Structures are given as structure tokens and as C-alpha cells.
Length: 300
Image 1: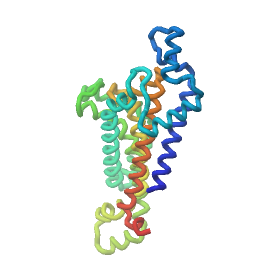
Image 2: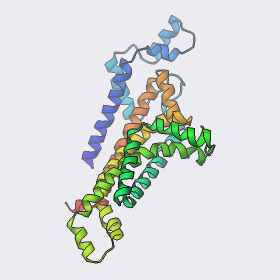
Image 3: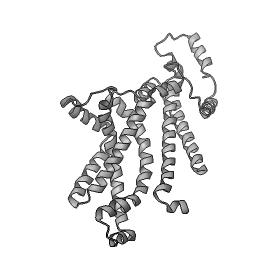
Image 4: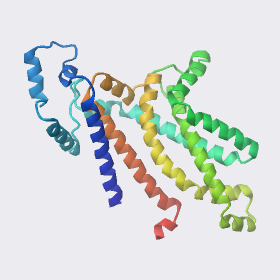
């Protein structure tokens, strides 16, 4: 656990540093971003430089950013003039709801497809569908779903936050590629498990094929799948930022898009650090889940 926590801290530092350097190298001037459409005079520019300590060397500003982030201070938004924690905290719930819903739906679809498509013809059809879903950008899937189920059939709202109905299409959009990846990995794991000696023993004891598949092979196939789940939830969080923009939903997507276009560095950095934190947390939980799935790891 200490090793995993140490690795996680290194990942967080690397993500924050990469984002900071990328924003530092981006074209544009920080003072111009803070002024926006306001009055631009030498006095105002001087006051902004002093207030935000922009006259310090870049290395000092970077170390100051790391020190404040270590103490939970993510700074103040250039555009909104509010603490970044308030800006992100107010939009966090819709994004987490979307990512969690998509993740659960993707896992359920993967389990159903991996277990039910065992016949050769069903397997070929499912594999083709999975390849298409994995190869298609999520935003394109979202546009297709919008065109069919919102514009043409009128079954779901086009955009906005209108309860569960407005969550369906964005969640399905994110879940389909996830289900495609997980189904492929889970099916391969089941195939390998069915060739193990313990399956022969289970069949010799009179267990039916369905019982062997669900009670024995499926459990042994879960380890690589759990590894992917930890990674895919991080992908879901990043994908939610794009899908929220496509569907016009509130959340970190709108905040991030506005922060990037207005060069609001504190907000962009906070989103990157938060995404990295979620990724590290979920992968650590996935490592702990190994001990529950495979008791042999607890004894080793």
C-alpha cells in the first residue's frame, strides 16, 4: 500500500507538471487573459502583475503552485474571480454521475455479452460490433444517438440537465466503447479459464456448462478485467468532459472548455490534477480488489 501511495503521488506530480508546462508554453499572455474585455491600462496591468505575482520567475511560480496544491489550495480563477475549488465543486456532481452511470452500464453490457455470446455465430457478430464501437470516437457515437433518438424519434431530450431522461444518451455514448473493450478482454479470459484443469474437475463432478462458466471461469477471468476497469474509469472521466459539451450538459466539460478558451490556467490545472487523482484512486482500489477475487494473492 505504501508503494502504491508513493507511485500515485508521483503520477499526480507528473500530471500537474506536464499540464503546467503545456499551459506555460501556450501562446497568449496571462495578463491579457485576466483582463479579458475590461479596461487595459498600464496601471491595471501593473496591479494585476503584483496581485498574481506574475513578476516572479517561472520556476518560483511553479514551486509555489506545487506547494499550494499540496495544501489543497488550487488557486483562484482568472475569469470568474472565485476559488477554483468552488468552481469545480459546483460542477463535479453531474460529471461524476455521468461517468459512474456509463461505467456501470459498460460493465453490465460486457458481462452479458461475454457470457451469452458463446456460440460461434453470436461470437462473430458480437466481435464485429465490439470492434466497431472501440474504433468509433465517442463524440461521433453521441452525435448519431442524438440524431436518431432525439431529433428523429424524440424519445430523449436534446440537451441540458432534465433528470434521468437527459442522462440516458450521454451514458450510453460513453458506455458502448467501454463495453466493447471489456467484452473482448473478458471473453478471452473466459476462454483461457475454460482450458484450465479445474474446469475439467468441475465438469467431472457433474456441474452444467452454465454453472462452470458463471461460478468458476468467470471469476478467474475477472483479474485482467478489473485492471482495465480502473483505467477505463479514468478514461470515462476525461470522456465525460467532451460528451458533456456534445450534449450541452452541465459539469466539468463546460468549465474546462471555458477555462481553456479563456486561458484560465488555475482551473485547467485543477481539472488535470483532479482527473489524475481519480485515476490513481481507482487503480489503487482495483489492486485491492485482486485480493478479494483471488484468495491466493492474500497468501502469497
